[in-house]
Length: 391
Image 1 (cartoon, rainbow, N blue to C red):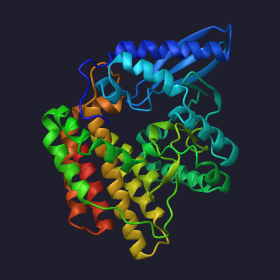
Image 2 (image 1 turned 30 degrees about the horizontal axis):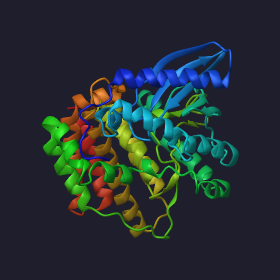
Image 3 (image 1 turned 90 degrees about the vertical axis):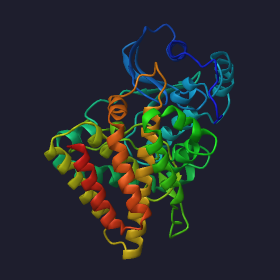
Image 4 (image 1 turned 180 degrees about the vertical axis):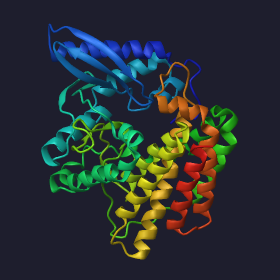
């Protein structure tokens, strides 16, 4: 990522108009002569996503610019709009683009894993069309029914444990992995010696606090996997992208895969990071915050059942480190987002509540750096989240 933004940054209106045009063009390629109606955009900091009706079929359409986030694009890290358009044409024609790999992963999962994922309807002109999925999300169910937190998280991870370990998935992943979405990979890109100072300059009043947390996290180290193997992870497991079309008793549907070989605890950390962030920024009633935190504690305890003491402590420490990195990643993205970019509700709330989130990050990274016993660290961390969420 270049160190400085271009002085002639792309304008959001131009970027989004181009994306809408590409969706219309790709839809015409998919269904010549059909009536195409573009629906609501989905707020996103990564890709351009919106509903689209093609004839009588409701779909989701997604477009990625150069494989980078919309935040980076609109900040000018890929050049001005003319340069971006020229490079985009070449990018979508190059094998291995981000959405080409995502489409291949969805096909792989439907064929080999038995996981429920959306069907790929078409991928062309850099646009990925998938079937629409409806129903409550994992995020919504946890907020509405905190007592189900442990059960729902366990159901999601149970499906992934079984589906992602199947030989066909492991064999088929090699050429279509999306390793760039891994938590530690994102952290390394954001806070390296080039782009890190740029983020700090854009972070305003919270820059110093973010820098302190980042410095602490960079001093910490991951343990090597005990078996020498990096296991297949879903990679971008956000609770708002896990749907329960048949309600909480049914099987989940997983959107937006980012399959890659990754560290133990990666998927659990992404889920917990986003759920805990939601608690921190949404001012929930005490009962909700306490219920969700207790459910997370039960879920984490269940994930470590049967582990020897040393393995359990290593797993819990790594889970904590990945959680803290992911929350730092997304917090920094939201507080430095350029104007004109439609943020999800969580993004707007995080910008307003950044100080509280950073207080928790500061306290828990300090516990981790001090070598606090990992089980104790998690107990104290969840207590910090609840206290901050309801203050």
